[in-house]
Amino acid sequence: MSKILLIEDDRRILTTIATTLSKRGFTVVQTSDGKKGLQLADKFLPQVIICDLRMPNFDGYAVLKGLKANPDTAMIPFICITAEDDRVRLRKVMELGAADYITKPFTLEELMGAINAQLEKGQELNRYAFNHVENTIEILNNQIYYDSLTNLPNRILLKEKLHDLERGNAQVAFLLVWIDQFQKLRTSLGIDYVDLMMQTVVNRLKTGLPDLDVCLRLNGEHILLMQGVEADHQFQQNISLIIQGITQLMDEPIAVMNYETVITFSIGIADYPNDGTTIDELLNYAHFALVEASTYLGHSYAYYDQNSQAQSRDRLLIELDLRKAIIQNQFEIYYQPKIDVQTKEIIGAEALLRWFHPHKGFISPGVFIPIAEESGLITTIDTWILDQVCQQLKSWQAENIFVSIAVNLSGVNFQDLGLCDRVATILQRHHIDPQYIELEVTETALIQNPEQTGKILQELKNLGIKLALDDFGTGYSSLNYLRNFPFDHIKLDRSFVERVDEQTKNATILNAMILLAHGLNLHVVGEGVEREAEYNFLKQNHCDALQGYLFSPPVNDQEFKKLLLKVIPINVINVEASLNHQLAHQLIGSTDVQCHGQ
Image (cartoon, rainbow, N blue to C red):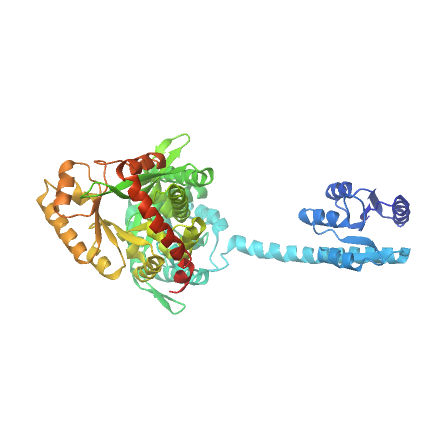
């Protein structure tokens, strides 16, 4: 029996229609109030709603909008009753999603025709939905047992496989394989590419290692191998043979979609029954071991142990807390002054992120930054830092305090071709002259994709932003970076500065680096200066600037402002402010054009 909701403020019409429909076998829910009609629709979910368009206070338009805003009522057919001359209003209500209309005065046949038409449409949709559900169930049943891409047995069959293997073997090895370049390839070449690549890898493993008991793709990103071992003493030997076979197979480039890619793998290994006895346990333990293996470069593998599980769990908890920290504003920006070596005046600062957890207290950046990079959260964090720094600069500049701030930029950001636009948007939003922002990049950021990174750095340079190479001297190709990338500054790594007065080799290296940088017109900053002797060495060797606890640790914005006002004469600030403020408007207006002009 079909249910009809009738909303009509004219009591006479309301009663007449309700009586007529009841006699025709319909269940009628009725009201003369639009708001009440919305409540009844949500409560009874009728098959059809009939509503007068013109009603006081809450009219038919409002009723229809309310219905569409509720997912439970959005699809209920809405038939509006309107006066014959309401053509403009009628067009509006049809655009809002009304299914049909009848005009006053109307006959019983017209009313029944409109209702029956909507009921028939509903039945047709139900038949379509039923057929669609049947087809979907059939597809899902197939997917339960087979991966749609590789057509290999899926996770549901693992229990049966494990049951079969345990009957004839003392142990079963679970090897969870991860392609180290998976995320990078998916970002740069797309999902279709990595799907075909994974299919190629699986086929290669099945063909090259025919003795494997199980070889399947899990969760789109991992490959699971299972191998039964007849005797305990053969377990390590069998694993070694499998690893050797995988290494030989993966050393050959993968050719997919006109691209030839060299890949490396990480493998986590769990042992049935010594590590676990259920599929979920073994997969989890293999994943814990995989996390450990992935910390090494090149082909690598690791066996599960409880210590690696604890470490992985701790990393996961930090990642979860990081996500909360971003939402709950648990981060603060601290500023470590940069000091002119000759005058000892503040010439800028480096913005450093501090995380004060509500329960765990201060968490070191050395702990959470690597996890943020691995999880991809670092791009959100870096964007937040730059935005906060620009906001702070705007506040200081309103007080005629103009200073340059350096912001660290993780190498993960350079996977995004829109990085320059993102930076320009933040500068424009806060009306900050690019000359007051310096971006610091480490050598590891340059290794991953030198060509793309170089292009993005040049785009940032064209904005008017200063660029610094951080931790200079710790990599293998530092000199090459100075030649090929558009840096303005280099920051000498603290490992060279520490006790340089006592380390002859470090002194020689530092002196050479400073001379080289000056020969390339680069500004040199010494990091980690904590002793007077270190400062004296940098001064004598004409280093331009320094940072370190000898002069100031990182401080919050209020303390840094006090340092600025104490060190820099107010009259100097005011003179510079009037000049720099004029330049700011000229440069800000051109940033978007420069970004897109590359």
